[in-house]
Length: 241
Image 1 (tube, rainbow, N blue to C red):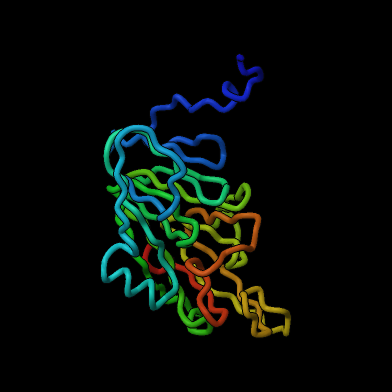
Image 2 (cartoon, rainbow, N blue to C red; image 1 turned 135 degrees about the horizontal axis):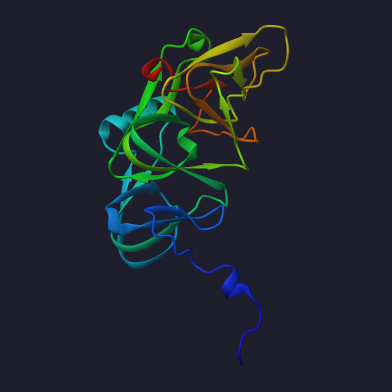
């Protein structure tokens, strides 16, 4: 008996041959013919062809120690072989960018996948307000290649050069090279915007040249801008600003 309806037409695999291509808003299709790819551990939802996966954890002893100390980082797997790989992360929306000898500072919890040509590490910055939050950390992705990150909902990209820019630390996904970040503290007795609030309001303040990407949800969890005890973590500001 034939199957009627448009299901298999409406949701057919995209024919785009780019190394990283969106399969709808919430799934990423990776063409493995361009070389190995790093992806968030457990993010594979399907593949076609001959693809192998190796659990790389936090990516070496140095990064493992940094991740354990800071609460920042991302557990990765390396995919190698030939075929088409599909990855996703809890049906979050996916944003794809191409770096050309450039760098971005990303909340570790939002990293989904990136080309093997991209180098990554956990960095700390010396923001003036950072001491009040216990230290600021983020994942830095640097080099030339594709990067895919997730957002909870459609984000907004704010040009920090156009006006002073502030954001809730739990909504910030990433910022680009040339942007510097600091911590703004409001001691007016308001409820803290940071998990485990202390009665002070902490905000991320951005300046310089470039963009900060903010998602419409204050949902950053461990592995992102937060640390235990309600501290905030940032990332690239002083390193790339």
